[in-house]
Length: 440
Length: 169
Image (cartoon, rainbow over all chains, first blue to last red; front, top):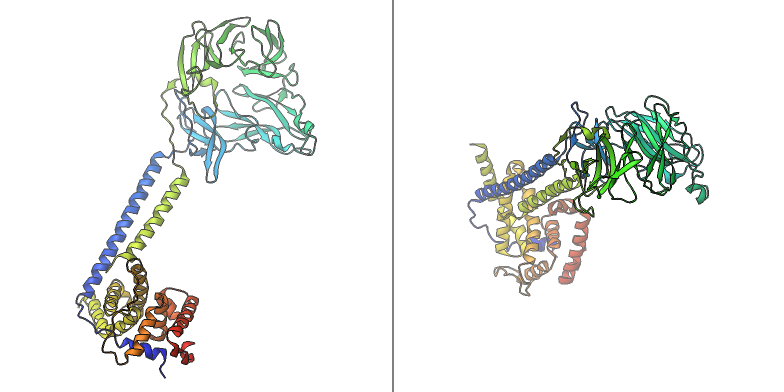
């Protein structure tokens, strides 16, 4: 009886005798060289692709924004920022801010971009500490570009009104130091912001009403709030109510150390209460004839430093600008596409935001300095057609205008990483395949 | 003598000493004289780049190349060649053509990895672990492939049933 081993051994006897096979060693050496050459070629191509990728990434990367010395300048153009700009917690003096989507590994999230007043660089501002959820109220840039005021989110004494934050105070972010001053407001369920603005470079004015109900209250109570007290906060001191201003007053403008609040309308126009925050007990009423507006569509007005001149876009938007000494306004020629008036530069010149074409499509908008007597204008800043709204440091609207290049547009790091990993995986696969397939 | 020369000399000594034994295994793996010769040459050539590392004990490495190459080249050929009912040529000088032909035909009907497992386990007398290492597969796969291959062989070679001790090793 034979085993399987024996039968295999018997069959193996049929194996051929070794034929002359000279040069096996040399064939082996050539085989090694071919494998090595292929591997090196793949390695070289991989390095080239990775170097190219790294070069493009480096070329398109943006330098981190840091505080810098130098005179403040007004860029002649601002650009829709890339979601992949760097972020900073100490940007230095800013000339403008805008809301923008910031990219992350998991997607996009709303954030804030600042433009340096000294370098013109762009950067995302790291999440403002304790900031209330986005959408409640935009952070506000101070006139000198050195601070950003925003609503805080914090703890309530009762059941919080979660949908609204809850908002529990006001914070001021110092762009030079990165520090934050916080004013917490005692609240049972949270505050409903009415307004938040800067009266001058060192004074915030704000108002927020106490919400009547938290998450466990009726929908009605959750949706209603008390009239908010109008507060002024000089940085370095404690906030205090503005004397003589009713709770729930609607803010028309805060600038030049004053606020103007809407008081009443009449057949001839509207009447505002003008309060000088340095001496708030001495408020005065100013009448602006020829404009109407309901409670929900008050025309925001820009008063000059003296408080005697006003410019506004009334009735609908866009529309022509009316400007002049309070009580004697006239329509400024050639301004019918104006969206808003930002400020007065001097007794005869205002800065407006206007649409480039009638529908405002494609060309975006411009900040322009406009002569209130002739309507002659000169564009100061060109704004992008896409993206969020822009806030400018109004003190810098008279700063020297400089040519602004577009900010860097860094590559999406997810694509870069994916391409790099894909390249490496492909290279390894090709190299392994080559080394397996190459015939001796 | 320089290091490369020593390597070449050792390689050629190995070839001279072991080529016939390798050819026997290769013949069982391929069932063809030409393929066996080619398979052995390829295995030897592929061993050259690693010779400095395996010079002290080259045979396991060469046999590993032999076994893997036999499986992989069958896979490559499967897409290039048509199957046929005609088996490869056989030596007319076989002393017992009936038994050899039956085994030759039975091996040809095995899947390449099953065939390799049978040859390594029952001709080269490798253990299951050594067979697994030689083919780059798991021990469990070796066991299952062996079981399936033997079952197939029993169907093709009824007299194998008379060797239970051998078959269950």
